[in-house]
Length: 231
Length: 231
Image (tube, rainbow over all chains, first blue to last red; front, side, top):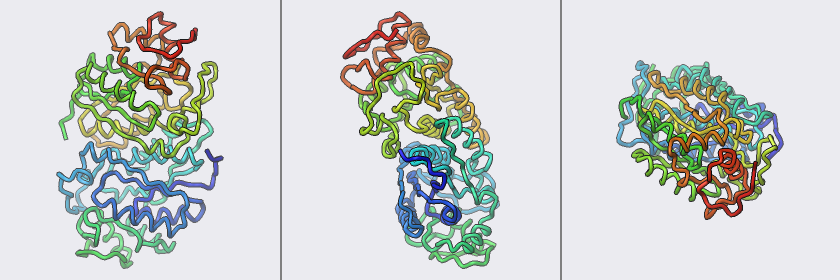
């Protein structure tokens, strides 16, 4: 086990645009370790490719890819249960969408905390956003505050790990703007929940992403099957 | 997804004596679903055998066995990292022992919560005990209280899942006494961290178990390689 290193941070990198910008923010002040979780989603191979490309870009040495296939086994979500259709984007609908994986972020954060404690990291960065979170209950700052309390109570007395959510109060358009300022490599990311060759342009994730780029008036460098106007 | 069933409870069953007594307590008032986690421990096969025997005994239909091999991959514990020796029992030593898996219970509870939400269970039972917890920081009731808050904030608004720790304030001897009263099948359990044929009698887990039976003046039905007096 390594000695605690206050400048080392774990970054949760799905491979999407939010984690890309989060990594760019973390990399300004910290040595970073990248963690990617495969929880049985349809587009896992494409996301993993994006993860590795981002880790290469940020010259990250410590990389961990963890398989949470059991979250797929228990079902209950259209991301992992292929018998449920992925719902088309309805950005005015504030109900929890069918792509909700029950308690997904708690599973990911628990694993990230175990790894952070072992490698001596003092922070976990993730790209959660309240506004554009599609109503996922585990994307709110109050949830992360409560999880920090669990970390403080459930780890060694000398361990102190903060959960950093630098995008939490931003809109998707703000994230595009922030990433553009920082030179974040958006061309290496992947967001689509449905396709792996070109982005579908119509799933919740594509719609939120495209609307963010459109509002920020920045061109999205990814190829899309269709590119609707979401403004 | 099933309709919420207030009488359904998930029970975390490692296969040891504490989870056996916890299952016996839960089964008095609830229909139970058994969850077993393999996190890369040395004696996994033997524990899984105990899990299935206990599930048969309690006539449990819903069983889920989840592999958390990634907790082994990241190391940091003698239970999963074979390059670290399992420390011999030192029951006066209150330091966190080398068998500590970083943040293990948070990982298990996160998974249990996901499953509980999908199957509509209203409680998660586990056999954590503060007094005989060997100093594990994630075996204290304050940790579970904080985790309940995380569950409330991180799941669907209509979801309410309680964490039940009926053994939390008991000693190992109390647990033996309680299990004896309830007719808990101790002969089907496994506790040893080191061996799978007969219990070693000398690891932390064997020592705590044997001391509990000795204090309760109840014979432990398991075979042991050596059976020291821990009183």
